[in-house]
Length: 313
Length: 233
Ligand SMILES: [Fe+2]
Ligand SMILES: [Fe+2]
Image: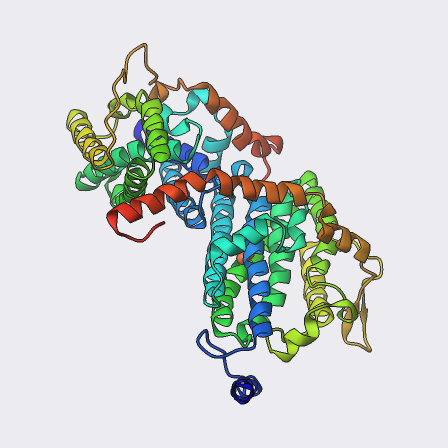
């Protein structure tokens, strides 16, 4: 038995070393499986919770063109949730099980969605910065060692980059618009900039899962590396928008070849993570309510399928 | 362009109501499906309103009394069964109307030909859920029955002739009723009874007389646009 396990481990290690994909039916260490399920679930949950702050503005979108773009975006996020829950199912964990864990607080979603969308400009900033940060995080995941996750990420990243461009374009319209529109855009950037930087997770020295995830080739770059990459991308984009990033320490560092930026308020990050952000309670209770209020619909679909011998909804 | 306004407002208003489901649907698949239908309708509304004037001026700067949609589409979502009942009544009507317009040689033929495929999917979606809810559990049956009942009085107005649509409205009504009856029968439900037109029932949306929830819907929809006169977005 022990010799068998060792042989399996050797095959798995060799596959990783050769940059081959691990597929659902391949042997994998329990910890690798658990770590993937945790990460994919958190990612799927983020997609569906992330629908809320933006859906908040669908009914008030100020032009029909923007309304169509926003509805399509929120719909895409639901689709991302679907791909990711399906990808997680290849590891033997059902969507229901994962949703239960989300609803009971045993699994998390990205803390960025615990901030409120207070004005229309927030819709643009979410596209530009939040989808932008997500892309920076996720493009390397297209090469993640687990096949179904990597493939889901390829589709998702394509759509996220649309979202990012649409958000940028929305902000450009505001910054070139009236005084009030410009102020609205700047205010939104001021509120979302720092939380966006926190999306890359704690600094490398404090990151609980990073080293192991990198060894397993689930993760390819450290949190701080990705954060720096994101800052370097955003600074010229903010200039193009004519908007200011709210960091007095932000400046080009010739020696490093990167932008330096000011210290992040990790206490705020920890507080939001712990449930004390502005919208934690609201987001989870809306999700739970939608799920509970939908229970009779799911039961009806299952009952109908049982009677008529077809797949449920 | 009475007809473009009437059909455009139907699509615009129903799209808005369906958009209110975002983040609240009973299953993830329905988040996608309801958004799909809302997007199709919004696309149709934009084409139709653009035949009349500037789409945003028409959507955001008209007062309630100037909207020409039927009252059915402005009714609040209620529970999922209520929304499905509204979808069933409306998409069956829209599919049959657009099918006729597509086959005619009026100004809406090209638009209707494109939209009728989308609308056929909307109708399939509504029928699919009517069957599941009607013939699912006792609770879903009861909820579906209540939704159908509550919205029944808004269905008479669908067949008020719209100026500019060359359609046999009596035949449209009969065909609609036949299809609804057949679906409800398969779903173990019955066609509601009760008034559908006249002073005792609702039904003057085409003349710009709406129900109370519509004003509140427009207030929300128009507020941001109206707060920044002349701004572009
Ligand atoms: Fe997404
Ligand atoms: Fe996105």
